Image (cartoon, rainbow, N blue to C red; front, side, top):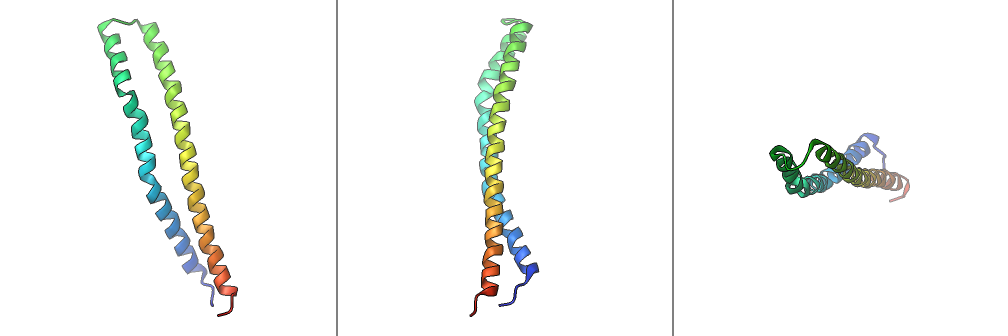
Length: 107
């Protein structure tokens, strides 16, 4: 069988796109979960600060804590993104490997 690098590259791009598109909703949903979970807590902190129930120092301290929490959560997203990239790369290399095997295997 003839090896057509253009066709193989096209197939590799296709599986990468399919893998990323398949996992994209997971990334969006994860970000949504992280931010939605904070909505009530952040809303209460803001309301308490605006009403004067907490002072600026306490508010700033809590905002620093929230920043660290969000940063940790976003690092988790980076791990998820890395996993998506690994699956896409594996799928692309699998396409290439199968094409090479098909080209060298007699009919």
